Image (cartoon, rainbow, N blue to C red; front, side, top):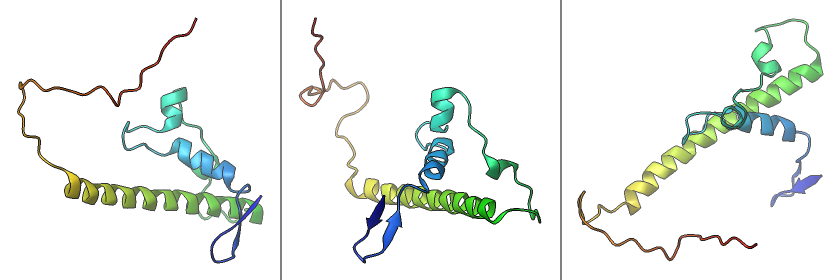
Length: 121
């Protein structure tokens, strides 16, 4: 499956998918502080990037390409997380308003936006 962006370049979306899924499932989540794989399964999968020796001379070109793809994916993911954190800090600073009530005050909370589920039997 190929995708053409607005500039006319085609991108293969299927080939890097396993690497992207691996990067996502093993990267640390900013909310929980743990990776999704660790939260769901209790362990993080190891992959060849963790087990490769540095400056290994006998490496196939396919393995090197795969390693480079993983490295680019991890680097891109780290950049995206840093950009998102910075954006959220700026956005929070612009829209955050201090509440006009204090701890212990009685506050009416509207439940109109709460999602309710009904059991059907």
